[in-house]
Length: 423
Image (cartoon, rainbow, N blue to C red; front, side, top):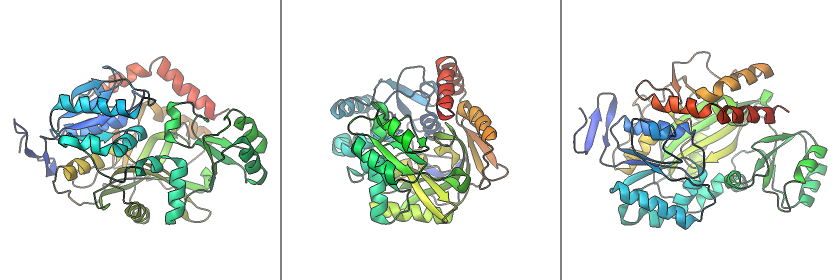
């Protein structure tokens, strides 16, 4: 069937399901990070099905704002430090402008937490559609301390961690800890304020730890975590969508091959690889939590003890979600839209050995990984197909916009990130 002129259920010969294109999608971003390929991927994923797409953007010249599949960009610069009431009102203004029930698609923790904690207001008058979960759960999952406590409570393996409340606590930890350790910001929100550490930081010994801790203030906002040696570990990712009963309607697993900054940042290259054990662990954990919605989880398989350990839980879509599709051409964003609009979500096996590459960061990541000699024997030798984060034959403007914004300050920023990790 071709697209109808007035909305309603439509189907395409490319997908074996019907989508309700009378219900738009809205990409919700909080903070200043214009080069976000996940938002572009979501706009394309639903836009190609004829779903009207809208997005919150920093300005009119972000890659997302330039997509041919975007109906309108709501230019609304935010920092993440605004009062929640102001952010909620901004979303409601966007909803009034759209003028019909709209599926919300948060791309960061701040947005996911805001939606979860103000669900009643945002869902009022049928303005927005989104998965409903316990209001405080997204905040706990996005917090390193909250996630650690939930893992311990539910028996899910995770690296050992300490959460110092003072410099004295750091000193006590330094006496008994087994080094090296990893320092991370305790809460995702810290990156919008004054982060204690610039991302994941490996600390070799007590002297280095105490020197760093002097700059963390009287109440360090850090987690000191067990270091899992990369030569003895494998990085795995899980993306899934869970319905109102915490039943997985779409579940995908894959391996992270490269990240930027190396071994500690966002995914630069990954492969879709089936892993029933990991999928089962994820499903059981989320069913115990009672969570509903899209999730992006980072696991690390520790070859020393043969266990998968949960590192991060993002209660929203991941930037690399377009790595994953199943044989029904379903990804997690499409699954959520179908479910929230009352349409059946088809079951199918995930497409194996697909590759995802983020063009602007994978080249420096590849050079850094080759220099270090790190290999990923758990990744497929060949890809069955490659999904690029930015370039798409039917939507090239986001790619050229990304290139333009990477020149000058953008390129300098990438270089500084690399230098910071290789001092």
